[in-house]
Amino acid sequence: MVSKCPECGSKKLIRDYEKGEIICGKCGLIITESIHDMGPEWRAFDAEQKEKRARGGAPIKLTKPNKGLVTEIDQYNRDIRGTKISQKKQPQLYRMRKWHKRVSISTSLERNLVIALAELDRIASSLGLPENIKESAALLYRKAVKEELIRGRLIESVVAAVIYAICRMRGIPRTLDEISKASGIEKKEIGRAYRFLKAELDIDVPLTDPSQYVPKFAAQLRLSGEVQQTAIKLIKKSLKKGLISGRGPTGVAAAALYIAAAIHKEKRTQKEVADVAGVTEVTIRNRYRELKKELNLKIDL
Image (tube, rainbow, N blue to C red; front, side):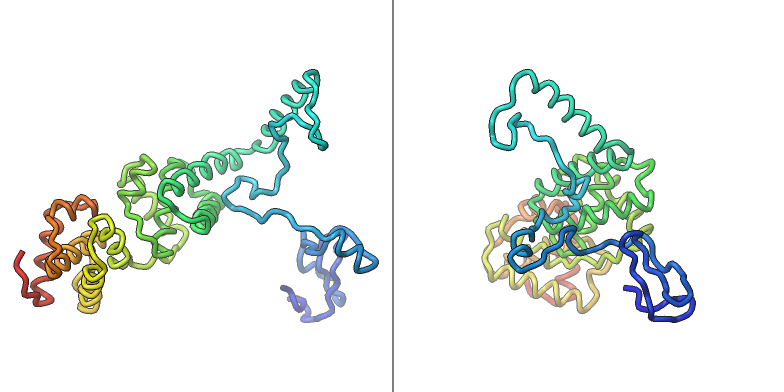
């Protein structure tokens, strides 16, 4: 919020809500234009009027192309009293509905958002992501559109990349394989779009902690809580020693579970663990040997 004039330093500011401007009362500089009046558009002269006129609308939703702030002509063909509209007037309503949609989605930006946000909702729902993650992903996509980073790129690949980035930022264990399967886009394409967005938008994405994948993989393998705890301890020791730098988090999590399951006599085959984690058996063997050697584990598998 502006507290003083940047030109003369005066704190005497005039807010002209009719013109939507903040003006310096000393030198006349227009400091801000197009300000919003956050108050109600109605007036109340007593407490009873204020209570009657106060109202609230639906919250702004970034997952909607128009942020949920547009009116729509519904499909029910009924008037405000619920009475069915006559057959003669229904064609007129149909034309109004059609042109209303055309006007609402008139620019290329609006058409882009309609396609992208519908795809975002589909992928996120397929992955079982909560509403707040969808909203964050929609906000990041809107930033990419504003910076004109979508041109020349497949909308679906950018949407998948945005979801992957938000999942990593919020610590939600969703692998690139899962997002690729849900979106129908190749991993390479998603990875390319993700790296581009990360560089252009300067996104601070933390390194993925392999222990985030442990509960998910353990549940699919039907392993006990003790196995999960042991696997997480192994991963934490590895992180402290810097053993897993540059290693894929899913492979490390899978190898730690493979070792922990053997320690607690709940052994699973390398193929079973590899199928659940979406990695190869060779990857699990390599990570297993590294962990066993560096952590001095006395175990034979």
